Amino acid sequence: MTFAKKALIVGTVAAIGAGATSAVIPALAQATISGAGASFPAAFYQRAFAGVANKVRVNYQSVGSGSGVRQYVAGTVEFGASDEPIKAKEAAKVKRGVIQFPAVGGTIAIAYNKADCKNLKLTQQQAVDIFLGKINTWDQLKCGKGKMIVAHRSDGSGTTFAFTNSLSAFSSEWKSKVGKGKSVKWPVGVGGKGNEGVAGVVQNTSGAIGYLNQSYVRGAIKAAALQNRAGKFVLPTEASGAAALNNIKLNSMLAGEEPNPSGANSYPISTLTWVLAYRTGNGGKAPAIRQAMLFLLSPKAQGQASGLGFVPLKGNILAASKKAVSQIGQ
Image (cartoon, rainbow, N blue to C red; front, side, top):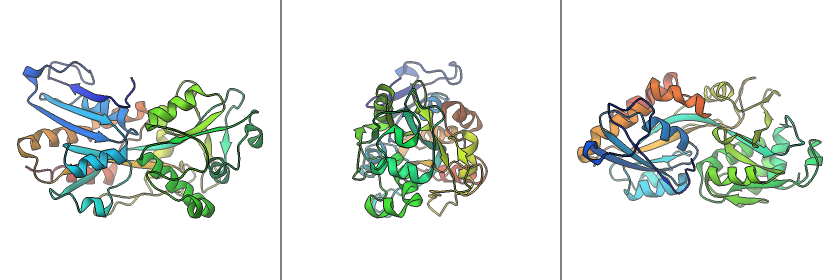
């Protein structure tokens, strides 16, 4: 299923099996809650929200983190979603109070489509040089031959923030020339909207390379092994992502990052993704919002994360998220 520009509408009732997706039956729907934001976790949200019981319907639009935060600040949705924690200046505009919590973890793969390049391994400097345009042929990597086509996001994206945050940690040149953010001035490449758009460019273009949430690595798209701080070349997996996320310390807003984590088994570009809810002003929908978000954090939902290419939350991060959800009020 393509998520971009489509609402992920999931209706569930007690008679429907866990994880099943069905058409919504209006007579049975007690509450409908809407959300919008990051494309990075869209596959996980679709699957998880399909399991919400007690007649709650969740409508989630995969529109990118930037758009999701804007809609959340404007108050046009019940919740937003972003791969970058909300900035203080944006949070200050939310008069209903910000409830922010990590929903799931994930890795950002340097993903490529090159049939004559098997098992690509990249140093951190090589990764930077590809997106700076200094490496522009596969011959330079000694992995296949021909021109390299770089794909990047064209929209405001938390995935881009996490990716460029890591590139800035890898390289002072990248940090000074390009920097980090939801959108940056890319030195090279073609843009695609959402993870879906970048995946489409890479999937359909031999010789293409870009950055994607691990869940989009399939078919002709392969993931490069990226060298970590310990010098080990590591693929983006649930295990390597979990090792990296163990380095993250959350602040009072449950925001936290580690753009180049330590540890021999850590994948260098690993991140949390956040849900943004309101502390007050939820009215009669407050119980439904809490129910949906607690289910998102439940063992059943988090247990589905790894099969979809995400990293389930555990330990202190999971406990902090559940505590935050309990503060969602009317």
